[in-house]
Image (cartoon, rainbow, N blue to C red; front, side):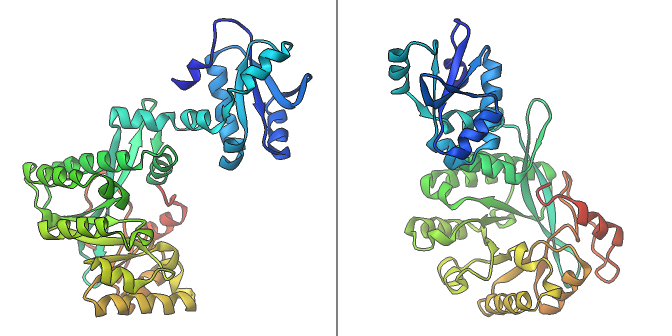
Length: 367
């Protein structure tokens, strides 16, 4: 591990940090660091074990912004009195962020190496009939200590460690195995990062082979594209989307909001489904501007023959507004929670369970 490499059998050693600003200096003092007498612009703290180093860097990662972690540098010294040696060591100083990320996201490296990813399924309901027409596959993970990690934590870790593509490909593979294990003929929405299929288009061929080997049909799978706005003009992305469509997969665009250029999405990607961001949906029954924006998005999508999923539905009033608006499908804690098993009970849209809706108020969005 990176942290172990900085330790020595000679004790004590000193962790020395050059802060990039006054706020970082203040945080270091709170963490037990002191000014170095011979070089007061540096701060030091004695360290006696690898575990102590890991704990210090974990605390630093939680106390400092990533900008401060990138701007501040650290090194390990054996003596505080040997100024020439200190200056030589100082020339080898590295940004704190090189260690804090390894410490902060050590659980994520373990999750990837041990393939500790699993999935929960949240139903997507037809808002006219109440039938569950599909399920979104939501990634979760556990470490050896049985700590749970939600989708937001997994994506944050993947992005921060620059392992988003590796995570995306592994998650897709595990997800397809999980879908096959349900022995269901329903449709499943699988999140996919555009950069992952741009970087390695061969992974799509592998997914197709896996799907056929598992006895699934491409028509059962809808690939849900996220973070596509910056990639609208990327020819390779469009080529890969067209390949998926030719093989029979459905295409959905996730987290669509009013700030996006809907015409570009519709014309460039020609999705089968759009999912409207929960930030726009939540509270829409009480918010006139949101109602105008939602009406425009739903009408535009329907003009292109595209189905609409309204995400983040929790309140009865919002559900009823989206139904009356003509949104095709709905998803959210007010309709059903993500679960390990597939929920197949039809919704009674006239008499929605108040107990479920009340529970959704206290249910964490990233559960």
